[in-house]
Length: 303
Image 1: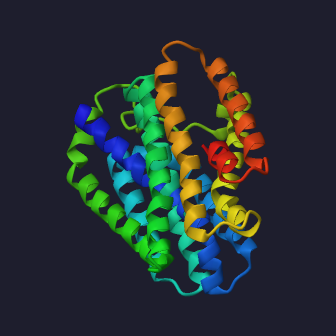
Image 2: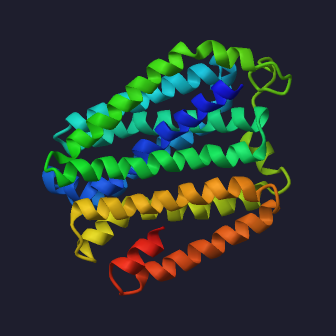
């Protein structure tokens, strides 16, 4: 199970890689494609819509083909979409390719979260999302490198697409490990004859509404910061595109660090305490970011 856990962690790195690319590169992309700055929101909403659709249908898909194959196919979809982004010279292609990127991201996210929740401990779940942060922080750094070398955002997308294709190959090769791990009777892959849970039933579970509202608010902040952070730094604070991408990567680095330590904090504090600590830290970060004291407050706030 240790080898499989390592593969799952690497898969979550790949899940994070494309999530931060659009926002960090958009000031350069919209200038090259000659589209308004606001068009990033269109692409982001399509990606989010695809993620929602595939997440809601993940239980049916996992029961039918298994977690391993869902993960491999999903990563392949994101690799193809990123390859298309890198080759695109027209905004319309961004709109089209956002569909498989969102569908792929939602499927692998739900599949791996479910698998880790069933087979591992709470600390492993925190560290799983920590590895998402590793990918999300690495994406803007790779993009910043190509922007600073005047090699264009296209090459940043192509390199990350190549990483995704390599991981896809690894996932297909290691499919037998996933089947071997499915020994528990509580795994949804084992209960293929049962009907998928209805959304209305899940919402009625104790604490479900509160968790969904909290997670909605967190995701809104995360997406806003990741998508518009670089544009804000370039357009409002007058920072260069490549430096803005590096600062945005610090935002994801902060998420990574927080999730790493939360894995240890789960051993000492309950969930409510951890959520309150997180909310307080987020508020502090927002206040520090908007202070007009240059790089010091920006870097501190984003972290």
